[in-house]
Image 1 (cartoon, rainbow, N blue to C red):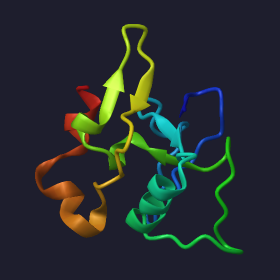
Image 2: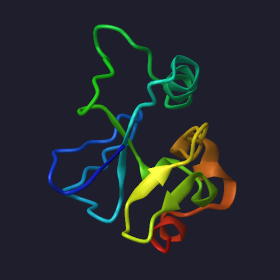
Image 3: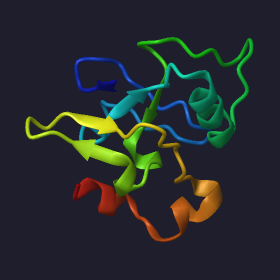
Length: 108
């Protein structure tokens, strides 16, 4: 699910301080319900579920900056979704997915 400016969304990725307030053009996505895909997301974003990090539906998000353009679909109405099975892969520690820039996602 995508969250927009009506919420106080913050990205959960380690070393990311993106929020809907600072970057309203980004979309913020709930963690998947599917346990296997959810576990891949948690590993990818370098977090461990526990006392200091809990995934709560409606308050724990990953921003669109961490997905490739191929992972994102946008409907005719402008609603942004992450494609089924996609995993966040663009981070500061991997040179933003080797070649993609924030600007390339803004153009989507």
